[in-house]
Length: 269
Image (cartoon, rainbow, N blue to C red; front, side, top):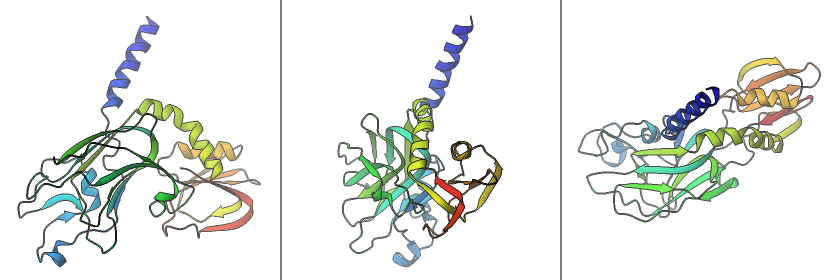
């Protein structure tokens, strides 16, 4: 009886997690943002990077009104890109991308779609190419939607869509699906390894404090950080055994690291 209940519960969990879009309302960034007031002399809602993960696919067409899609500006000699921070490490299985449905099709055929495991850097957005980049290949299409199946064991924290030319990038919605249960089961040990690879022994980190608590060791402090979605760094005081969880630095650099022999910092990737 007990085994049957456990099996039923596991199957229900699998079914629920399988349909979860892990990109929904996560942090996003565009290489640049189109401003219709400057280039078109028009004032309408458009172009913010967050529109590509707002979950709304009811208005994917520009018809002289608001255009709820992420649209980059055209910058000379620059390849436009859009990225989403999934805020955890996942095994990525499927990426579903929606472009424009009218006013000229957005040709979803001239892009690179990458899953990125970030390097040890506080400036995660600016140093994406320093991490391990896995390319998810797809069949070029003239349709305003592509469904991409990534190679097995493609793992990372960021998904980036980058044009191969210097034209505008227009993305109306991106959905990312993961083998969530296996990702979460595997993430603990892999995140510990990454955190220690990104450790700064004898340094303190001046970032926004989330919470403080007692901890037995560096490992214990780092594990506590895993349980907090907003936690970027675990700072452990070797003398007082105080564990301070901190958020991401706001300057986009690691200039907020300072020598302190009493403390160790581990950045969570």
